[in-house]
Length: 193
Image (cartoon, rainbow, N blue to C red; front, side, top):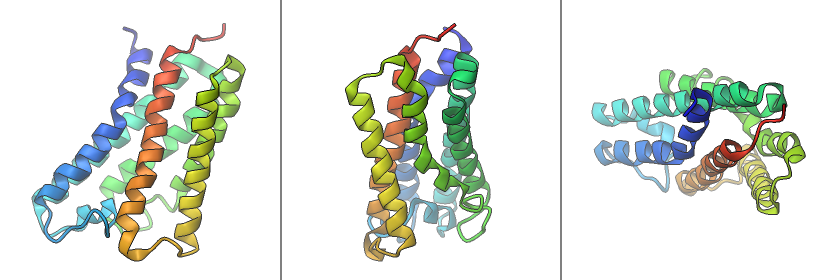
């Protein structure tokens, strides 16, 4: 298997890596709630094992996402530049999230991760020329709308504080599920010469 295909194919397992990290770190955490707390709060937990597991897993998740972006550039070149760029930026925000604790503006890289809202639309636009299925179109549109609604609810303070962990996990299912699904689809797409 070529390196570019391996870099894309490995991203199919990103949801397992991300959610596995959060679940395993939470097993060591003191006074942590998946329903009421954001995942990043594991990085400031009183238990050092929880902190180390979380930061390591999030860093590896970021590396995996960046590898996907590199794989897309190697396989598709100029055919998916926006999709590759947005995936790369999202991966870099994870690297910064692992290195800088919640509360630091560097944690979310000054909010640049909000660019993930554009990913499903960029993906649709750039891959649309390759005769994708109706299911892929619908997955992309539903994901984009959910990501937008989640960020809007957070900014407008409509995300219930006591459920912020749960809503973030649902958001994660959409984002990481979409990244995994798109990696699966793009692994199978033939490159235009």
